[in-house]
Image 1 (cartoon, rainbow, N blue to C red):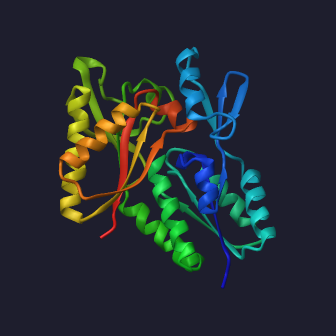
Image 2 (cartoon, rainbow, N blue to C red):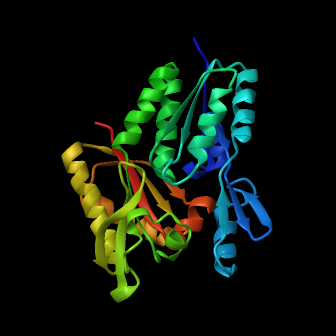
Amino acid sequence: MPKVGIVTDSTCDLRPEELEALGVVMVPLTVHFGDESFRDWLDLTPDEFYPRLASFRGLPTTSQPSPADFTTAYEALAESGVTSIVSVHLSAALSGTFESAMLAAKTSSVPVRVVDTKRASQGTGLVVKAAAEARDAGMGAAAIEKRAIEVAASCRLYFLLDTLDNLVKGGRAGKATGLAASLLNIKPVLRVNEDGIIEPFKKVKGRSKAIAALAQHVAEDSKANGRMRCALLHACNEDDARELEDAILAAGADIEWATHGVIGAVVGVYTGPGAVGCAYYPIG
């Protein structure tokens, strides 16, 4: 039976120990605070990142892995005995990471199938987990790739932020750039759309009402499409995550929880503190 390796990048926001348990290799992006550089999740955990972000003047920058970084990961897997690789990454519309993986795949000594999830953070994480489950069920690389693409296409990612400043200054606001969210306590619920671009979904006055509106939408999706596998995501603000979880359940959503995950440093540069949201896809 062919041995298939699975690779992802750090913006899936699955903890290193979780990825190790899944048998997935992670290639990190990098966060730069001035002259200091940190590998996402490896050199800088979310618990360390958000206090540093709060005290830093200006906005940190981020950088994608180079093709050489992916080549190193692919060749290490090849040397370990894998005969093919499925490489699962965040939206190509938000980062050049997918392109770096594609370039490395062209020179890999084993075939590499690169998947653009058109999602980020726990949305990508859900796709990574589905790919690992498919591999563990004995599927070959083509079937794993197909499963990853199917989950990515059906996955929805919604979130709300305390401020749009980081997203706009970091150039990742997409279609949400023009929102005057600071006025009148408007809290926009944002989504990553089918093209992997951030756009407004709903504008609500007040954070608690925004959380309730998001929870109601998840419940409506559940009623229309059946049971959902769902991952929470938050910027080390567990109270808001619990509020969203409780609201989703109270709204009547049929949910199987996959992860209660923290937003890592690279994604956190753009979401800023106070972000909370969820990713989900139907499972039946």
